[in-house]
Image 1 (cartoon, rainbow, N blue to C red):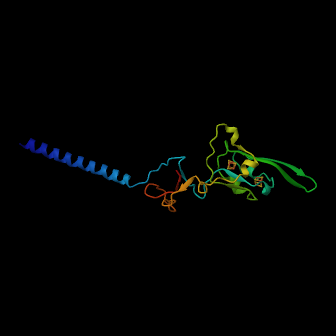
Image 2: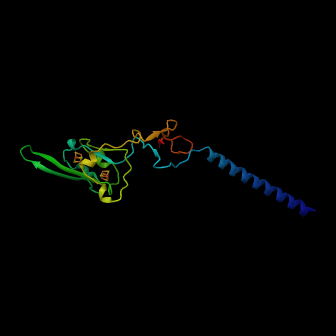
Image 3: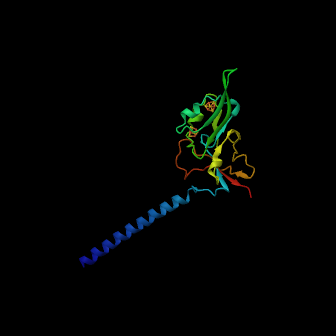
Amino acid sequence: MFTMVNGLQNYSEQAIQAARYIGQGFVVTLDHMNRLPMTIQYPYEKLIPSERFRGRIHFEFDKCIACEVCVRVCPINLPVVDWKLRKNKRKKQLKSYSIDFGVCIFCGNCVEYCPTNCLSMTEEYELSIYDRHELNYDQIALGRLPISVIEDSAIHTIPSLTHLAKGVMEGHSNSRSITKFVD
Ligand code: SF4
Ligand code: SF4
């Protein structure tokens, strides 16, 4: 008799424990149902990069004084600055400028230290290419203004979704900026 009561007691304790685990599982499921997906359907949807996003570098040829500070501060001495000395003016004249984005680590040092602010980071991140040598941008390619996903007429911004609030790291329970191609 005592063994049977003991067995029943164990059985009921295990049933309660199992019910608790199932309840916890449902709580987790419900919590996830309340969240936004973390993935987007790229390239049909695009995230708008944050204001301080470090994308492809933009270069203004006319502002460059060929000082080569960008080369010295670059961890891999990447920018190639070709110049000639104009003896009559005792001044360097820039001939060509290039950065190889196949090697660049987008650290932003060159942009930070350029004395004439002729370098800037853009929000352009679509740099995939079939031939890596095409990532070696000369001054003409570097001088091209970035294509903004917001200004792209083929893409529609979803207004109800906004950037994460300042200091918020969790994307799940917060809305985000997403753009979509218009059908
Ligand atoms: S630091 Fe700026 S001004 Fe100097 S060479 Fe580089 S890009 Fe030109
Ligand atoms: S972003 Fe960094 S790695 Fe790229 S060119 Fe500038 S300093 Fe060099």
